[in-house]
Structure formats: C-alpha cells, structure tokens
Length: 392
Image (tube, rainbow, N blue to C red; front, side, top):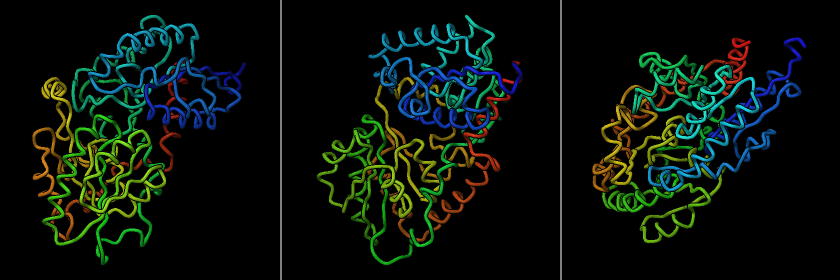
C-alpha cells in the first residue's frame, strides 16, 4: 500500500467542551487534507467530535470538572477514566495521538501511553500555561509530547526559553470567527446620542458568577451615580447560568438585558461600547472586537493561597499577554472591589486618553495573531500531517 492510500488511525483525547470544538475542527481539516476515506478516529470527545465521526470512550461530562475543590471531589472517577483511556489507546495502537487542553486529564493519559507504547507520536493541541505558572512543566513535557500546537503567538518562544517540546503557533480559533463579533460599519457608534452599551461578562462557570456578580452590580450602581453619560447593560449568559444570573441581578437599578445564545452574544459584542469582564478567553474576544474593557477575577480563598506563589505571568488577561503590555486594567482578589472597578471604568465612558490608549493597543492584535492564508484548523492539520510523516 503506497503512502497516498495507506489508512491512518488517529486518536484524539479532549477533556472539556472547548477541546471538543477544537477537536471537531481538527478532524474536519484532517479529512480535507488527507482524505476522509483514509482516516479512522477514536478517543474521548463530546457532541462536536461525535458529529465528525468520533465515538467517545465515555461521556465528556465524566471528566469535565474545573477548580481544585471540584477536581478533588471527582478524583476517583477521573483517575478511572485516565486508566481506561490509556489502556484503550495502547490497545488501538494508533498512528498518532492528539491530546487537547485539560492537562490534568490529557497529560496523564499521554504519560501513560508514552511509557507503555513509546512509538506512538503524541501532539498536544493547546499549550498548558507554562508561561503563567509552574514553568518547570515545559521541560518535563519533552518526555511525552513530540509537538505542541499553540493558540497564542508568544507560546513558541516561551517553550523554547523554558526547554519545552517543539512548538508551532497555529492560530487561535477565534481568528476563524472574527467577522461574527467585529462590528460592521454603523453597528457601533461611541459618539452617538443616547445611552452607551455596556457589556457585562461575569464568567461562564457557576463559581465565577457567584463570586463576581454582586461586585459587578455594586460597580454599576457607583458608575450610574458618577457618570455623565447614561448606559444600558447587556449580559450574554450561557444556558445553564441564565436563572442564576436573573436571580443575582434582580435588584440591579440599571436597565438590563440578559441574552442567550451565541448569535445574541456576538450581536452584543458588535454593538458594545465598553465592557466589564471576568478574566478568560472572553478578554481576547473583546480585544479582537475592539471593545475597551476592565477585567476582574476572584477565586476561592484556598485556591488563592495555593496558586499565588505559583503564578509567574505579568498579567491574567490574554489580551495583555498577546500585546506584551498591560494595556487592559485588571483587578484580582482583594483588589477586585466595586470602588476600584468603577473608578477605572468611568474614563472609558468618555473620549479620554485612557479609552484612546486601549483602542490603539487593541488595533495591534490582528497583526500579532496573524498566521497567513491558512485557517487555524488547517494549520493544525498540516503540522499533524508533518509529525506523521516524520515518524514514517
């Protein structure tokens, strides 16, 4: 059988919803590049990967847990699924294994596979945040990862500096969707008459919302008292948090719209004048949409004690990390107070030097995140193909 017609067995192991989405796009791009008739897929995924033909070993919900306390509570199940997955990969003996994000799960699988079947090449899609905390992980990954597909442009240099595996920036998946949340002419007019559009994003996890929603509500109350411009607030809510957000905002005095669904979320982004957001991928979404923002975050007291000495990054805001400057104000833990947030948001409601500085910084994001003519999933598929070729 020649190279062109040889069938390939590729296993993909993800650990949560975002990884499932990346895995689905990778499967689709691999089919396009290598021919769907040649490819067989196995592994762990959710509905998106299932729609591309992958039959998951078990439901993704078994392992999709976040936070130290939650992980401890589900540890027996997670450990069982790690062993089950590693056993299945070794038994299947695939041509290549791709692990996607969720390092507490996927990296343990990769280590077990490398120990028992060292001939199977392993690609890690989404670099762990070694540039932010526990930098020693980078060098250790060389023992069980052959190549990293990075979502952020500064990560290849970070791994090179820290002694990590070979790393290629393949582009963030947001690049493929930027037209959905970037305003068309006329959709955003900061200088218009009438109220400003203020976007509030308290997080996509219940723990984030429970810690930030009251603080955000008090912030808006102060802002309403001090601002010369009126504003209306929109909160895009994920389905499982809609009720909690409705209950948590019932006493807010501002005019409030809670919207559901991705289309409504992107519409809110396109018309937003300013944002108050929890730290996360949403800060990069806002940055690429050109929305000036203030970022806040709180974790539990036990997580703060454990994580504080481990964090090495100059910022918790992805947009700042890509820009290599702290252009976006951020407030964490004890610094995350209504007074501080309101004082920092207030200048962004007018045509001030603070607002213009953010707008100018955000204009640099496109160039910094550019990858050429390929889409991120296409570039990821190309690197996977190159790793396969190298092993042949």
